Length: 327
Image (cartoon, rainbow, N blue to C red; front, top):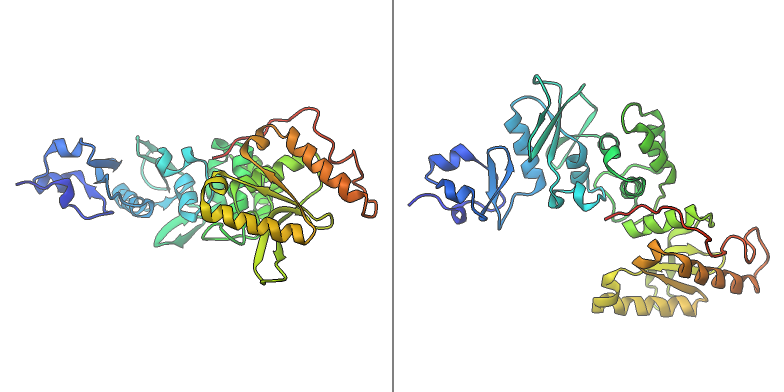
């Protein structure tokens, strides 16, 4: 009896010729049980090889020195990317090489010929540096998506495996040249530190685009009774205004709902006004800004005046600009 898909190791990549030599029928290779991950290379569909393993095989398959690049390197770093730029969304493996005679582009692999870029080694894979990877894919992302990616690169929690301080990112982006450099600089100028999710990026960009004051990202509040630390997504600490983004899990996951209730109770006891934001508020923010204006005006009646008086910074927007989408 010939080799069958279920006989193969889980999470491995196999060459077509190796499988055929060991008796696997061609119909198995074209069946749903096997997935082609590279030219002439397959993995089990039920237990597929991870991106790191596929990238290493791609380098070996190329047969000349190369480095993992573009969206592949960015995903291996853990950069927040839209689904279409990730492997699960069908993104191809990208390699940079100075060898060979011409670029190569297939349904699963893209090889770019270029001068040898600066590299680092992570997870046993030689890759271009993170900002080089982002510059290479800048033209394929919207501005918001590129800011989300940089926010994840500079985040102190829930970010990438290779963190770079925002000041260094802006310095490197300022010195970048060539395709994608302009987009990289624009996104670096908008990026913030301590941004722990794509929706937080969208919220701080929304506030910026409508001329609102800069918030503190993931502001820390300690429950005086229990010592438990809570983090506010976006905060105006001087006004005790908390902006919390609630995704679907905040409404459906029992543990998350319970945690949100405890957090809201602590914030209320400490004098905070909590404004909860949902996905529809990002695309149509009029109601959100009205609630923010109300909270700001209410606080102003008991606080010293400042440059953001009632009816100025938080007036509801008359017209919305284009807010980019992100996965």
